[in-house]
Length: 195
Image 1 (cartoon, helix red, strand yellow):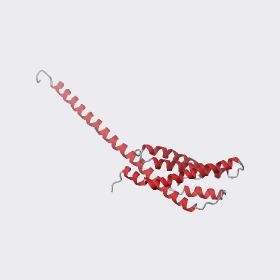
Image 2: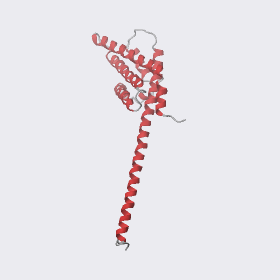
Image 3: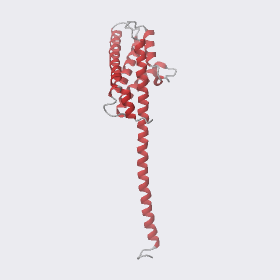
């Protein structure tokens, strides 16, 4: 007995203090681990968006070169070849057997991703990329719609043509903005690649 306190009381008090210290260390370690996990999650999302944007930008450049002639050929085969050029990248690789339905699904996914990337990068860096990806998805979806309805005659076909032309103007404007703003370099800096 020390100062009127029994050994068992002393051991219980020390065990309580030790348990408190251990639990405090565990809480800090959990917070630290969560912070690292969040950084890794954000890094993975940024990398995916960066490489996708890089592919889409390059793919659209090829698309522009191959479709630079302003011909008025709106045959089903021509529209299909335009769609095939736009989806010639890894994002659209896994279309499977039901290609048209999967293509619509992936186009919606691209549209959603164009909105999500605003949360992955700092403000002022990502707007041009987001607009480009969104308009890429919009242009692709209008082409798919036109392809599916090309055999219709009348106002629907004219409306589809107007939508396709408007979407093409938007994506061309965004593509030019990507080039002028050097958006990929800005995104690369935001990702903080280490050499």
